[in-house]
Length: 232
Picture 1: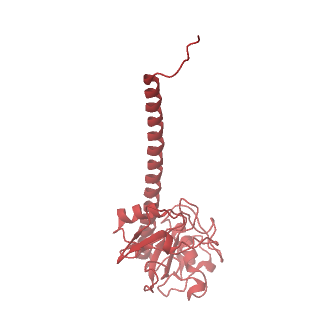
Picture 2: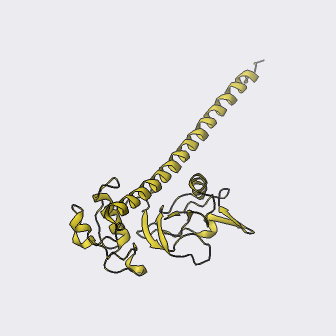
Picture 3: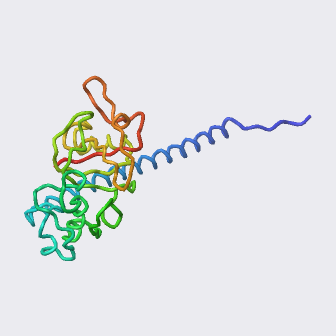
């Protein structure tokens, strides 16, 4: 009779240990990637906010809204001058002359406040006219009310959009690190901004969860198309 071979308990234990190590490595790798993306997004927000305030301090005007940009900043064209009314506006939302939210990147980059080189062009944002987040959606600094209050009517104010296509669990982590974790309160809030260039609008019902009087970012059931805004 032939003896039937099989795995010993020691061999099975070794295989299970190896599988456990591999799974642990994969999960740790995913955690590191997520942490890196959160740091990147926070760094972008902090960098642009510092640039915005630095520009205002130097020129006594807002980037994009500055009417003398072409005469005081090298390589800024006259077509990129704002109207100097103290608000960075889009033509589709009460602005006049140019889309100042796009010209803002032209002014900031050519004045040396942000990395990269961006040139104003009418129409939707492009990689030549505006920076992007790690998910290839456009950042936007603008005076509007596309942020915060779910179903409400917030006051207009200057804010910096993260761009969309950011998973809601990452938004929750960002909000906890730089603000209060509340997507409809504090200085960092949910935004339905679609990321420029025909992107999809982040759904409030998917990105956030309201239980009673408390609203939080959706962390358990993750929506992959979310975005936020830092308020100035």
